[in-house]
Amino acid sequence: MLLEDLANEIVSFTSELVGGRTINVMNTDGIIIASTEKHRIGSFHQGALEAANTGKTVAIRADQLAQYPGAKQGYNMPLRVNGSVIGVVGIFGNPPEVENLAKLVEAYVTKCYQLEAMMIPRLAEGEFRSRLLHDLLTGEERSLSHAQILLQSMRVNLRPPFGVGLFSSAERKDVRGFPERAMRLLQEKDVVSPEHGVAGIERDKVILISDMERLRSLSSLAEENSEWLRLALGGACENIGELRRSYEEAVALELIAGKPFSTMESVADRCVCQLCRAATAERVFLDELESRLNETFRPGEIESILRTMEVYYASDRSASQAAEQLYVHKNTLQYRVNRVLRCLGLLDYSEFQREYLMRLLIIWYKQKQGLRVLK
Image (cartoon, rainbow, N blue to C red):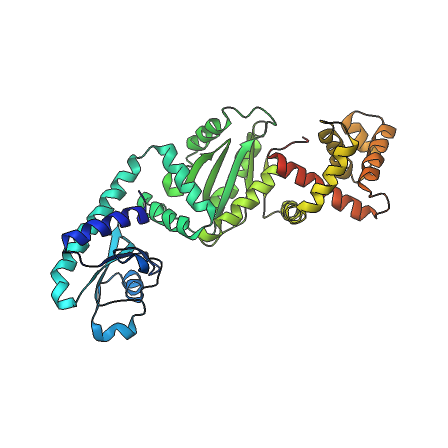
């Protein structure tokens, strides 16, 4: 159970214990996340922010309200789990009159969160990792708030710069058993212990969030196991709010790069990521180009002709080199290339324009397929 969920239960029950008084629970940004006064949820509370930042109780009298936007008179007390302030609980009333009640509320709510933190490690490990990874990678404010509490409960200290590493199978089709195998390898190397970051399985891939130095050091692991393992490394982050961006970069590299280790710290790999973004931005136009291919080529033939174009441009438009890689005659290769360009209406374009549009189309096709096709 996470901060908001537990807060809602605490507010309701604690209010009954203290005679129906107003009870609020705020996060460390001073935002009310649970309250007996429902209309105040989501609003800012200056007293709570001060209590969270100083780690000290903030008592607000009626004559001080002008100094505390969003607050009412009462006590605001920091909540701690494992020594860290995770939020603030407040009780309404004239401070001298509710001082003893405030101490009771503080003790009760703090104990609830401490007990909850003790229970978290007992959750099913796979389910816990999955929830934490989801919260870290969505990029949404509420999810990141959840993740921050979970990180504190796990005593995980993500020290910037950190980033996202995405481990995937080098096999094109059969990925059964890959996540478990990859996770065992990382455990053997002592890579996935909590103090080093957060690791978990998402579908058929393993995701590791850790400091950049550790992630970079895993390049050798990917190279040594290149027959079955790939590692794509997103860009560096200074805070958890940037992890979504790093994750998207890792996904793009994993999908397109097709080599044991790819990283946003490489100029070439960064260019691949930029092409992915451009393809997404031009998806309507690229869908139109794909429709032209579907009108000209037989069902199931698209993958083959796009593979031909990918090898052709990877060979610097050398028909002989591309033909050798694809085990076809040079004239056959040139015929296929011209047929594709004619179908797409690109024959009158410059060589640069042709290659740029074809690379975007190939990347867009791969993105829509959701796996490394054409390999």
